Image: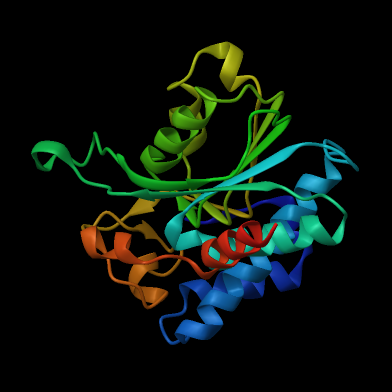
Length: 233
């Protein structure tokens, strides 16, 4: 059963976007657009916390499949408010060791990370958080390199036990920095391991991307653009 947050209950636009993600007839481009709009809305929630302001040093982190849509929505909205985050993109290879879905892992196979040493606020986003293994892996990597005072974990949809599961993976001194921002909480999983209704199935398929090892050949447009911009400086 799906439980909406108070913000989603109040916003017809958010409910419509979540419904389009679930709808199997939603085309690839519209599906991408939904994530972009939801990213902008999540950025608005972050802004409401008053944790950000002119000059706040921010790093925005995501997985490669989320970079051009969900993450870009967050990035564009923050930049419109004169906050200019550094970007960290990770290519993860999620798998279930020994075919055991209870203990999934998501090692990083490559990354694109801009300067983030002085980060005060870390924002890590994901299209959906279920087992939290990808977020855990990327978050662990970043925490070893930076020491943010606040950590926002943002996702349109998450599994009901994801928050407690992720917090339990870190020392209290770290997990106390976490703030979770999301619009819907689900508590059912199908035989394929997909959250129901979640985001309407496999995000790779719905975005028109290949899954498994093949997806890690994809380089997000936002990474190409920012590499080009930095090369010109």
